[in-house]
Amino acid sequence: MSREEWQFVEFTARMAVLSTLLLLPFGLAIAWWLARVQWRGKIIAETIISLPLVLPPVETGLVLLKLFGRRGPIGHWLQEAFGLDVVFTWRAVVIALAVMSLPLFVWAARTAFEEINPTFEQMGRTLGAGEWRIFVTITLPLAKRGVLAGTMLALARALGEFGATIMVAGNIPGETTTLSVAIYQYVQLGQDSHAWTLAGISTILAFTAVCGSACLLRRRKA
Amino acid sequence: MSAGIEANFVKRFSGGPEIQVEGLRTRDQTGVTVLFGPSGAGKTTVLNSLAGLLRPDEGKIIFSGKTWSDASRKYFLPARERRIGFVPQEYALFPHLSVERNIAYGLNGASNSKLQSRVAEMIQWLGLHGLEKRLPKELSGGQQQRVALARALARRPDLLLLDEPLAALDAPTRQRLRGELRRLLKNTGIPSVLVTHDRTDALVLGDDLVVMDGGRVMQQGPVHEVFGRPANLAVAAIVAVETVQPGRVLERGDLITIAIGDQRLVALGGDLPPETSEVYVCIRAEDVILMKGEPRRTSPRNCLGATVRGFISEGPMVRIDLDCGFPLSALLTRQACDELTLKPGEGVLALIKAPNIHLIPRA
Image 1 (spheres, chains in turn cyan, red):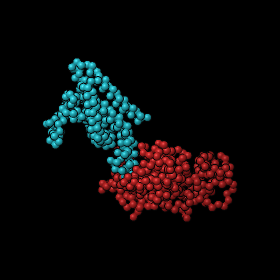
Image 2 (spheres, one colour):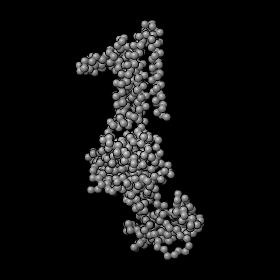
Image 3 (cartoon, chains in turn yellow, blue):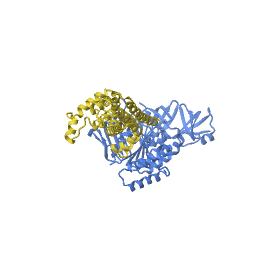
């Protein structure tokens, strides 16, 4: 493997891990909220969260580009408050990956939360525990497998993301180019052997993550 | 001011039944109040409302002079602030925590040494030595029950609530633990409210009984009073009084004379409203005495000639079905039954004391 290839792999792995860490608190909160709180119109919120799974990724990327661009509402605020540039930097990669893998994580974690017998949480209440303590000491440990499986799925999804990333982060070698963008570029340049090397690595990473997640989910059922 | 529970509330379930509790009261000692009734009677709903896990739609719940729930003021004290101990069905021990950590869960906020000593105290009191590090799935049903009690009692609650505490056990264990649970509950020094649909559980565990059916409180009072003197036909059926027969009042004096077909019975009937002429006669099988031979002078006021119809074995007891002009059941120990050498078709005398004949007005 060439130094350049290795750099793409290392960068992509770093971005995927960061994006997964970023989505965890949001994902857990959303999953818990969908699993435990009943309200009218909940199905609309569920649909919005699942949209990135089915929308063209480029469209999600476009929305992010407009939100985080210098003149976008969030991008403008980040620029003013912290002097942070997002679009076409590594930060945009992390955000794009997190948004794209959020639905998978929420789906897995929510299912895990819903499978917990609510009596355990009620017992916590009768024993004087507040909702946060119950979440940390009862809900989360009992949903551990599902949450871990969701984390691995999210990681796998992040490693392979293309459409949204290229929209918001572009293709700046050494700065925003991820594995899948690099594969695309190698093929464009007619350097198929490089493309194949990266495709092979990509497959191994994805296989490991999906298989690990499937093992976790299956053992939970047993 | 009463130290017990005073509950008057309504809880509705969308598309489901309405649970309406009127005048539910517990005595303010260390007694055990049993909520008793068939499945679907609303017992668990009442227990969960007392625990603060369900919010009543109307009415009030007061415990020991303190308001726990008052729908008219939109006031509701959540479960975690009620200082209760709760033992749910199947115990619901936290499956990922050891016995020790299950017991310690409610002691959050106590200093480490205080927590340790309280857990040790509970382990000692409930005989859980050697199980401290085990996970709930490595315990027998009886051990799980004791851990659930230890967890509920560790934080010194003011009230203990138990939902079908014996239902998760197999029959022999259930027999063995019934008496033990009664002793533990009496020794806690706090009042408890317990849900069961099992008649034996209710009789053995309870001081007071609250009979529920169809979401309503049908009758409440000391266990033996409710079992012996059901207020109406529905309660008589729920507490399973063996003999319930329609009868007619013939004469009212110090005692009441009742006719069931051609038979005459004498009862006290002190609580029967005057002018009542149609009644149901309730006789519990254990109040019927059997005797062979000539009728001699006996103290029981009722002495009926009867024919033996059949036997049903009920553990150490035998239930004997008799015909004395109307069907009558008697409950004898196996030994007594053997000594009498009863055979189907044979004649016996059935003796019933007048106070043991309970009359319910028949509308």
